[in-house]
Amino acid sequence: MIGRKNESRVLLEALETPRAEFIAIYGRRRIGKTFLVKNVYAGHLAFEFTGTQNATLKNQLFKFAEKIKTHFGEAQANRPPATWYEAFQLLKNSLAKNTDRRQVVFFDELPWIATPKSGFLEELGYFWNDWAAYQPNLVIVVCGSAAAWMLQRVVGNKGGLHNRLTRRINLKPFTLAEAKLFLESLGVHWDYYQTLQFYMAVGGVPAYLQEARSGETVSQAIDRLFFSPEGFLRTEFDNLYAALFASHQNHVSVIKALAEKWRGLTRQEIIAQSKMQDGGGLTQVLNELEAASFIMRFPLYKKRGTGFVYRLSDEYSLFYLRFVEGKPAPGKNEWLLQSGKEAYRIWCGYAFENICLKHAEAIKMALGISGIHTQIGTFLYKAETTGEGFQIDLLIDRADRAMNLCEIKFYGDDFRLTDAYADYLRLRREKFRRLSGTKKQLFNTLVTTYPLSHSPVNSGQIDQVVTMEKLFAYDSFSPPV
Image (cartoon, rainbow, N blue to C red; front, side, top):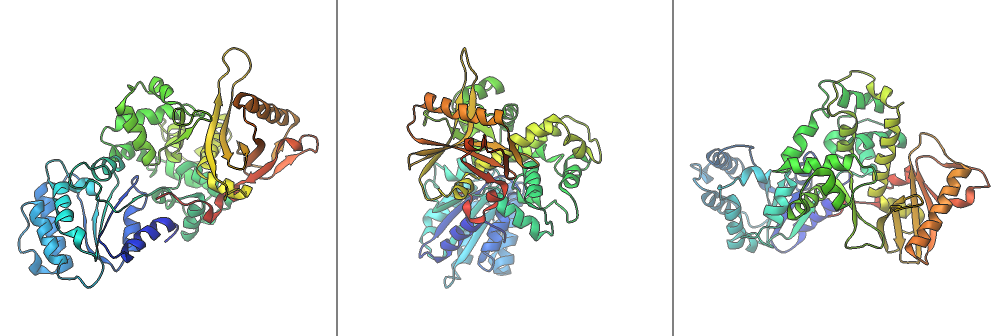
């Protein structure tokens, strides 16, 4: 299995504890939740049941009984249970006959099982509280693609499942390093630049990455997936948010608002742009989008706890909204034509910025400061009357009395530092020092694709350079659990 080291460790540790374990796994669809569980727990799955979308309660219970027969034998379920209480009694009686080994019970697509008025969650809570929690050989895993539902109904459950989870995993997209390893396992051997370009379009979703084909260039792959009439990723967007969120129109409104502003938006700007009302509803939408890895939230420097900038961080959504939505399928070689236009260069810059922000730990490792406590944020200055505003997209505030002011640039060749650009970086550093009032050492840090090309005159304005291969450092970043 490629990557997922932290998540695999959490699941394996649950097999070794001397107590019952109750684990919830959530994340966007096509992220690999089922694959993770079945691979890590191969040989330990005593029972697994997958919900059926839009199925009746009677149909779900019938399929549950059939699964009992499959796992434990015909005699265990002579007739389908009439309620989920009866279903869990069947499961309890079956599991109780095998107490000499660790047993994993896996409920997949939980939101499809626990439909309104089905009583499933209530009976799952009773099953755990009354019996399962006292079985030291038992591990229960629940999983669902509707991340918002999982957060509200399971992780944040106020009933019988309140605070019953022993572990939870928010499964994130692959990092660049994991994506490259995954592509190579499919026979797709692109270099760092090619892999980066594909990642900028589809992100780290395994189901999207696996659509790449050996022998294709990135341009050919993007053409086939996005610009052909039957392209797999041409029709994905309409289903993606509807499958994850109940009132997905609000989520899409926020996503589209953020797609229009490369620098990101504050909460008040999101309200103005999306026409949503301020309050708990917006907070819930933002939290759900962040939990499902669609947006990122960064604290504004000197406004910690009160000021944040939100950015659209889902590569696929950004690409789709910029180049596909509302446009007819143009056919072959469209991406080659697009890549010569200004819109392409602007998109490259923003998409690369997002990837660098996600891989801030890799940047820290390249700078040799991975062992130093830091706070990652952004700095935004809006000129009110005179002068020009500016933004520092990635600011690394370090405990050793230093800061890295990161300038992120995507180029298809070596980045040439002109005298004018060197002056801009020098003035930006001086403005930041004056506006922030910091006494810390300020390092101008360039994060770019290829090495820096400069003259001796302006070279002093760049203190460190981090090139794209450093973002692929395998052990530098693992998705948080």
